[in-house]
Image 1 (spheres, rainbow, N blue to C red):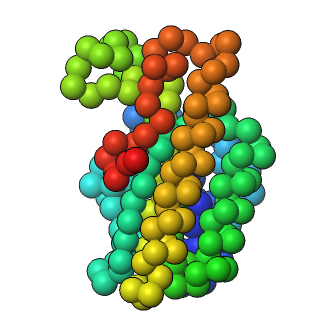
Image 2 (spheres, rainbow, N blue to C red; image 1 turned 180 degrees about the vertical axis):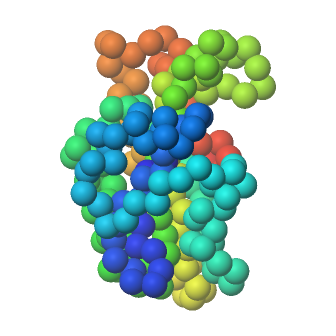
Length: 190
């Protein structure tokens, strides 16, 4: 997962990358050696039980906030320009609405290989193919910001949809992925 956010307490924009590996801690470190060699502000590499992994961003979801989640999908690889534009959009939103500085964009990079073994319409859970989840977590406190925050989330969801639909038209995209939805159905979609 890649998270674009400005976490507490500093509120400085960062990219958080959480990787997982099904195996020993030593195997994971070896597997991700090149990635771990990239300079970073912090690295916290260790074996974790799933409940701990699943709770890692709970601090960003404190009680008392107003929230809206929107979702879309993305088709890797992301272009550098598109990835930078997502981060720029988030930082601009934080500047325009400081009350929403706890908002984040999450890109879930989960290998779709197993999902693609099942046809697009073979189960109650479609959206097979190489599309991955893109979540927009908009968080604020002041009711006066309800409209601007909800609109920003909708705009970001629409931006994701446009990018996926453009990517799905490529000649190198498989038929299952071409049929996929540019929505992340866990969240309020259009």
